[in-house]
Structures are given as C-alpha cells and as structure tokens.
Length: 299
Image 1 (cartoon, rainbow, N blue to C red):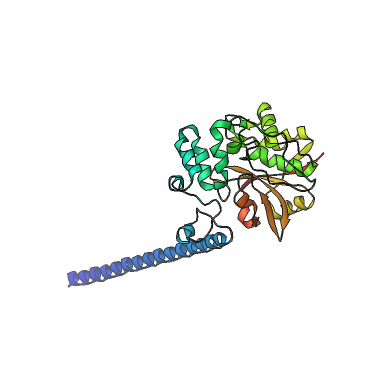
Image 2 (cartoon, rainbow, N blue to C red; image 1 turned 90 degrees about the horizontal axis):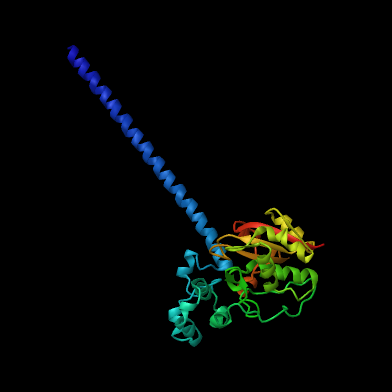
C-alpha cells in the first residue's frame, strides 16, 4: 500500500513537473513571438521613414529605388559600358580607361555632368586654366564645382581637385561670398593647403578650417551640431562648411557648404553635384550625416 501511495505521489509530481515544463515552453514561445512582432514593427517604422526620405530626396541606395523605375534619384548610377554604346564620349573614355583613375570613373557613373572633364583628364592632368572664379557679388555664394575644367585638373597632393578637392572648393565659395573677391580659386586654396601641411592623403585636414583660413583673413569656428545654432549662424551672415559621412552626399567622406535657410530648410552648395545643390535639405535629413561643422566670418 505504501508503494502505491508513493507511486501515486510520484505520478502526481511528474504531472506537475510536466505541466511546469509545458507552461515554461508556452511562456518562452510567447516571448519569442512578442520579440518578433516588436522587431517587425521597428523595421516597419524604419522603412516608413526611409520611404518618406526617398520620396522627398531620392537615393539610389534606398531599397525603394529598385522598385521605382520612374524616380530620378540623386546621383543615379549608370552602367558606363551600356552608355558607351550610344555615347561616343563615354566610349572614348572607356577605350582609354587604363589612364584614368578608377575613382574618377566611379564618379562619372554617378554624375554624367563630369563627362567632358573625364574626357580631357589624360591630356590636361596637372593644368590650371583660370586665375579667377568669374563674377562674384559680396553676400552671395556661387556654386563652384571641384571638377570644373578651369581648376579641376590641378593637383592636390597625390590626386587632382576633381577627386579630392571638395574642401578647397567649398572654402572658395565661402571666401567669395564673404569678401566679394573672385581671384581666390579652388586651386589657389588647394595649393596653399598642400604647401602648409593641411592636405592629407584623403583630402583636407580639419585644422585648415580654423587655422589655415586665417591666411585669407577669415575666422573659422567649430560649432555644435544643432539646428538652432546653424540657423543662427546663417542668419548672422556666417556661411557653414560641413564634413559629411556616408549618406546622400558621399560613400566615404565629403565637404559641402551650407549658405542659407529657406522655408526652414538649408540651402546646400555641394561642390560635387549641381543636382544636390538644387534641393533644400531638412535638418533631420542632414543631422545623422554630419560629422563636423564650421562657421565663417571675416576678421
């Protein structure tokens, strides 16, 4: 009888043990389901915001670009081999591509506006064709392009201004607007930066924008990443240069000028893109892409 009682007790305990395991499994399964739902909701939120940004700005890196064949994306990439079949200039470039830096061909694939520059690269590398930037009005900031044939072939360290001269080109725009002078070109600034230790292997040292600019009687000050502060500087007549991370403006690093505010958005002068310079950019779009900011004024 005792054995039966013990057996019954053991059996009852086993049932309780099994029920406990089943309950734990159910709770664990519910927890997994909740986590999956939260992850889906989070990713859905991200996709929603990405779609909103895509609709406003366009971006060939967005997954929505794949499905939207009619959207004209900023910096839309083209296949040069395909383009060469209908464009003799591109064909000539590819026939001589062994003499052209790969990075320049990549830039061309994203910006067909560079075609004539790349076409003349082999013949003109190292040459500078102008000692001024054209007509300038004080208080206005001209859009200058680093691949402009007037200075884009000029050397900047081991490269040319078209490839690595976004810093000098952005600074040339700032100086022109602040001073009204037209005789300080991107090449002039690149040459000064290189000769005075402000040219790094991948572009322009950040110290140039606070120390180097003193040569031009310009005061450069680092400012915090703040929408209100940026607007304050611009409304005070102080143009801004931003160092940009990977995003809408670059796949590696880039420098752009911000020269005004309109309808609560920023007016950008991108030395590598007329298309991006035509758009107004919200602070929310720019914020995560900015790694440093400088504001400028005359002494």
